[in-house]
Length: 195
View 1 (cartoon, rainbow, N blue to C red):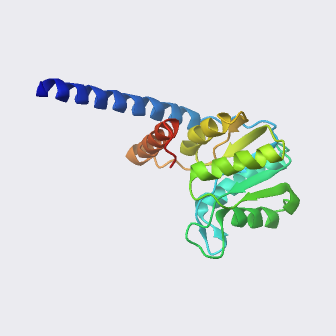
View 2 (tube, rainbow, N blue to C red):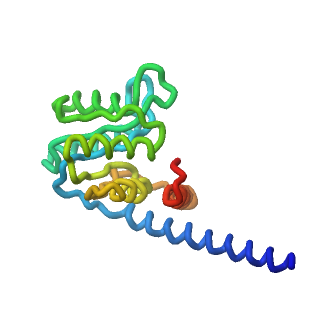
């Protein structure tokens, strides 16, 4: 009897690993595709900020969003991200300031500044877009992040295109680990656990 339980557990664990690796492969494939096309908004996913200045990752995301905006891909940009422990600045507000300094009119930038996680930021963006009657968006983030965010936004009825920021890929196991982490996050979200 014990061997049956052990075999069932091993089989379930193997199935879970196969599922995670399958989703990780989809995430990797999505990370290499730039789907940018005209949309109602460009959504920039937050990343760390340091005393009012964007981290290199956030700056690269903002620069890519700026590039898309200047190409006329969307009339507005939505920056996201909460305080992350900073008592003065939020990732979203730092993004807006950065874009304004680079020529984007402040009225063209909508700030989501409450999200403490990707899931919270995405939920807030969905509400912002609903209130503004926006139906489509280009998501700008790191390549490994696009798949999960696209699926979350699409589940709310939005048309979403991914546009990963240009980056130098770390390659190897670190890159693969990012895909696996995002696959786990996506699968947890699908069963109602948001991280």
